[in-house]
Image 1 (cartoon, rainbow, N blue to C red):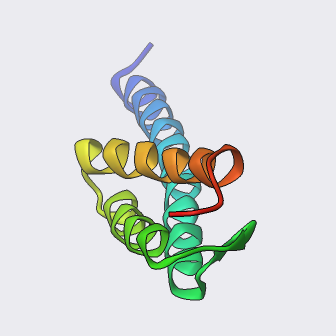
Image 2: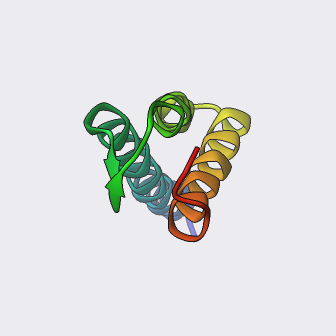
Length: 92
């Protein structure tokens, strides 16, 4: 094996890894955009009060921000609001 063949193999592996990360980022960003849309619209499964909207807005921004910690915090908040909305009380 010559060096150029090794370089192409490493480059292909890096390209596939980068493409995989882009797909994951696109999915997470779509979740953040959906949370922001629900916050602005005031509706997720049914009409929601301002508390849900504020939490969804902040968590949507956190999900879109490209840091692992903020993304995880934002995703947890989006999931919590979704579960709270589906299974929680209708009054707040």
